[in-house]
Image 1 (spheres, one colour):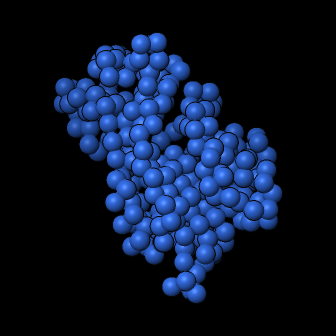
Image 2: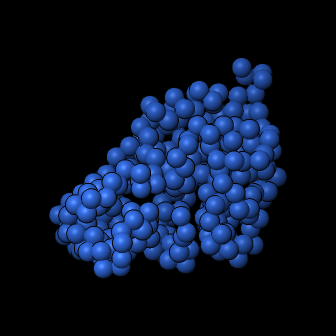
Amino acid sequence: MQWDAARYASEAAFVPQLAASLVDLLAPLPGEHILDVGCGDGALTAQIAARGCQVLGIDSSPEQLQLARARGLQVALLDAHALPYASAFDGVLSNAALHWMLDPARVLAGIWQALKPGGRLVAEMGGAGNIARIVAALNTALGRRDIDPAPLNPWYFPSPGQYAALLEAQGYTVRSLQFFERPTPFKTDVGNWLTLMAVPFLNALPDDATRRAVIDEVREALRAPLLDAHGVWQLDYVRLRLVAVKASDAQR
């Protein structure tokens, strides 16, 4: 998916802001080697670097990485399904990225290989029920136009049990797993969120007029459940936050 990185930085700045405490949870120490998986424009990567770490941000979006490089960060264009690292990092951070990766077992295996023994993974992602109303409205709108939305959905939103099972199957020790609703205000119109985040659904439509009609239809379906009394859209976010450790040989 091609990102409008400038728009994301402007309209979705809440994504790294709401997860800033992940850096404290990671507790990176000066001199540690840290990998930021799905670093985007580098907002959290920069916070890790400021703590004296050697941090590498990776992302599959050249547009996002251009902004991260402008911060002076070390970054690489990589698909997290094919990480090339072995026992290279003391810690891995990931925010709002793992739910875009549709083969989670492969991603977790690559992170496992990238971590040193005893290294930790700290992550936050969408969990089961995340943006459920938005997805349902999109599914309905596309279904009315005889388009099957299932293969277009770019997101993987697991339950805590599902993700814990994946972590444990790979050999991680799960230290903590939090699952919580976080209704999230979106400062502009929900149609802007759709054109920023739901691109695979909209790209399946035949023309701009149809895309505008679907956006209008979805907006109306979401107005009652998500638009508050002050005219602010409250997105139905549900998050899964985790800390997992790659056990050292001595811990096995």
